[in-house]
Structure formats: structure tokens, C-alpha cells
Image (cartoon, rainbow, N blue to C red; front, side, top):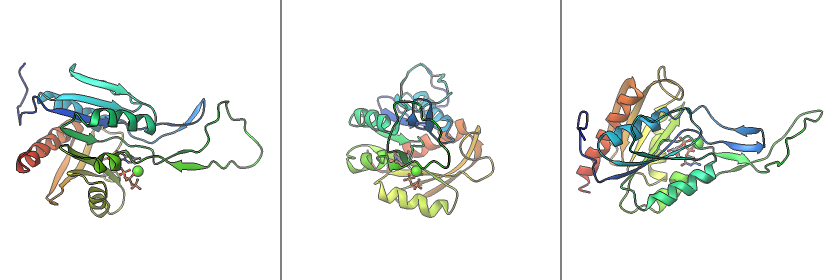
Length: 227
Ligand code: CTP
Ligand code: CA
């Protein structure tokens, strides 16, 4: 079929993307989550599919819907489920983009009955979830692995630390405190940095446009790396 604006050919390439928040249950009616809408990750899935890629989208709870029909969407809820699905599809993937906002902590104890309120304050003990992206970086072979960094303070410094610590090929640094950027809106403003530390500032644009540019930069870097 006819690709709109063919910017680089992804046909025959398998692209794995994670999007949206995760939810960590405390009891049957309550959970911890974050402000991620899933828009950026869904836009990336559609931008890759528009280039002919075979796309698998591992989606946390999100209102977003896909317009492209040829995307394999797998819905997950918790960080642990996202971990399982990302690893299940990882070996077969050529490009992996981790746009999801994964919970860093989950309640240590999950109550099977709805918690009753008590007098006084409540303290909940939280434990760390697994770092999915770090685990993918540790077992990377042929994959071009891209992470996101959500920062409100010194974005470039912390973004570069994550690029190195997680063995990534590129990172998309999102200053979520900037005007027009971040979680819920339809626009974003990010900096794409590859492992050579070439920095590409993608100015304020719709998430759809930002997604197209990110896919273009990934293709450029994969060509340069002679993959
Ligand atoms: N990530 C992940 N698994 C986690 C936490 C984060 O895969 N348990 C991934 C995110 O999907 C993102 C990247 O790691 O691609 C960076 O997430 P971010 O929250 O910005 O950084 P953290 O490494 O979690 O560090 P911190 O929140 O402390 O800044
Ligand atoms: Ca985090």
C-alpha cells in the first residue's frame, strides 16, 4: 500500500514500542499510577507502521486508540506485566522504543479485600519495580534500543546518565516541566540524543510530528551504524 511521506523504509523491520502508564494495585479498588496519557508512544507506533514496519505496541492503561490497522496491540496493567511482554517480544525485534512511564515503586503488600479506613494516618510500604529498560539494555544484541527520560530538572544531565546506565542507542529527553511539553497534551518538545551524544532538539510540535522526526532520526542512526 501507498505510504504517506516515505521518509525511510521500515518494511521488513520489527518495531517494539511500550506506551502509557502502569498501574500498581493496593487493593481491589485502588492503585498508584502517573500522568502519562500514552499519546507519545501511540504516535510512535503509528509513525513506524506508516513506514511499513511490523509494529507491536505494549500498552499500559490508556484511552488512546490506533488508526493504523496493522499494529499488534497488547494491553498490560502493571510494570511486571509490561516486563513480561517486552521480554517476550524482544529477541525478534529490530527497533525497541520504551516510551512508557513505568511505576518505579509498587505497594509491597496487595490487599485482597478493600482496605477499611482507620483512625489516624496511613503508612504504606512501597518496593521497587524492575527496571524494564535496564534489563533490555543488559541483554541487547542486534536491537536498536531507545529510551525516554522524563525530567523536570537538568534534563540533559540526567538524560545522558540514563543513556549510559541502560546501554541505550538513543534517548528522547522530555523536559516535562516545559510549556507545551509532557504528559497529557497533544504537543511535545524533546531532545533526541544518540550514543555518540549528537543532540537533536525537536522544537514544539504535535506528538504526531515529534514521533515522525524521532523515527527519522532512528533510521539515520541505524544507517550510520551500518546495521
Ligand atoms: N523504565 C523502565 N522500567 C522502570 C522505570 C523506567 O523501563 N521500572 C524506562 C522508561 O520506560 C523510560 C526510561 O526507563 O524509557 C526512563 O524512565 P524515567 O522514569 O525517566 O527514569 P528512571 O530510570 O526511572 O529514573 P528516575 O525516575 O529516578 O529519574
Ligand atoms: Ca522513573
